Length: 114
Image (tube, rainbow, N blue to C red; front, top):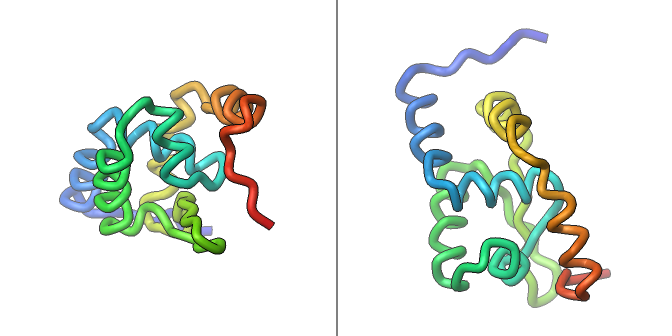
């Protein structure tokens, strides 16, 4: 498999997006599991409009994908994006966030859709 090479401008743009700790945290969570806005509100202790603004920027860059389930919209990392390997290597340097997601589940704050 050939390694995808990105230009300096493209890498700088991705790094600028991920330079915000909230967007980096969102990417960390949605790389591990699909999350809806209300779950990210709980995880990051931020307002819904603030989370939505960060998600919009990540969506505009095509770093996250949305999946509608009934009234809920779930977000996940776009693992097909040309920069995902680079993003994953950055996220690998952080705690994975699985404990926080599990705690959310244990407190019945995860959205369960069938």
